[in-house]
Length: 435
Image (cartoon, rainbow, N blue to C red):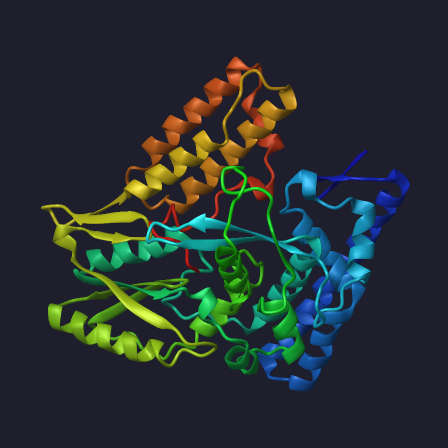
């Protein structure tokens, strides 16, 4: 049986029970919205006693957990999404601040620079905890003007383009190596407005029960040596978990404390662990690099290694977050999709492997995944002057596949779900996604 909630299909073991849960979810969401509003006001007012009391409710109350169970489940593929009438038991069985017995599936993914990074796949209980943590930390996140990780790639790119048009022609790209893995519990927990045990068991991955996924990248069986397996487990438990719903805001809160002050001649654009320093002159750029290096050494929450990747001048082209910037003879700045941005989109469409001989439901799912990914990709690269041509090509291809199978684009749009969309992954953005 299928029951809809917020336009998302959920399996239902018992329809009557699922409909009752739908009412419980509505009540939980109303309650959580009220508590979160009061909590935000308490944080803004500096009322620490009220803040602590309301935070405890958000961390402990099953209604808060139920709201997060549903929010997290909606982002999971339908086949792995918990049945709606099972969601309350998940909510009631979570004690944030204690170790979960739910396994985290891990697999290695090769990096262009050599070696591999760990990809982690969380179940509904971990995802619920992560959603609660993100909601609790939200009011504490005061992003700096130069931070763009929470806004989206396209906003960072527009900022870069505007600064270049203003005359900031000298650039330097820097990034923090293994950013998420460089956080350390002992340095991070004192910086977070959370109880230590919550940071230890719900924020970092130190105590995660990890299991090797039986499928590799591209659904190929995995074969690892004992040493590789040990290294994979070590990576999975280091610092902030990649793929966790709370890791981005934790990283964002810490990054907002970077002791950096923009100057008249030096501007900074930061996206997660990527930095583009722009300056009006060569001397200002060199000075800015040193200032940024010194500031990164004081970044709280871990021990971070900021590396200089490249130096640029806009007349010779600048590469940042999978985008290419050039300046025309008339002084206008042009932004283009980088080669890895192209490849990332092409490879994903091909990887989805549309089969015209498959069942209607499988064809519809594949088309919905393609369109959802394309739309997310289009948003991420919307600041590019050539994005519309690339987008139109693939939209026409998807439309043609749908038409040949007797499927309308309206059906495809209706079948799209949140988990299908494009994410700002490292490949598309021109890096290894060490974050």
